[in-house]
Length: 260
Image (cartoon, one colour):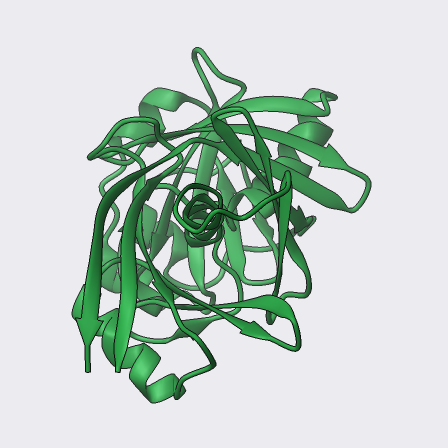
């Protein structure tokens, strides 16, 4: 079996920035165990598998450790591959997924994810969260999969040195930490050792939680954002009813072949 693989830096227009994702194109669905082995071999935060099923595109996402229900940057990367390498015609591609229909819209050099919003609720901190972050939170929320910790300044975001073994004990997919930005509306970082990703460079799915929070707090429907990992990434965000749009650029790093 030969499979074409693309590696794409998502949420950046420059190589070696943003979040690298692998996109594997399959003629049909392949065993989940094989998808997991390929994702572990790639050793990127996410590998997306794209194939056609019942006349439509289907997408599945795997970290090196497990399958997940939603991934933003790998979906952006998959849209980039279809538009730029596989001659997809049209302004919008739709993927069926475990999280329902997901759309990627092309607008010039930008791609926009259309995802369901995940409005977070205020909660008490779970065990290990505050000690794991070593920061005094302003507010703590919980979305469907992740905790959202709000702190006061971008400087605090940049200086975070979390205790990853402690964070891995927090009962969630991961932990988002966010504050107002200096030259953008808000900034964030995302830690998910629970799924094999100590710190994710740029996390589209985390912004399904961040956008409802910040649009409410800032009373704005359109926002600019940065994820302040070592690689960094830039996002254009908006909320439309119960959906969010998450925009960014993407660039291809490599095209290759997997022989199994």
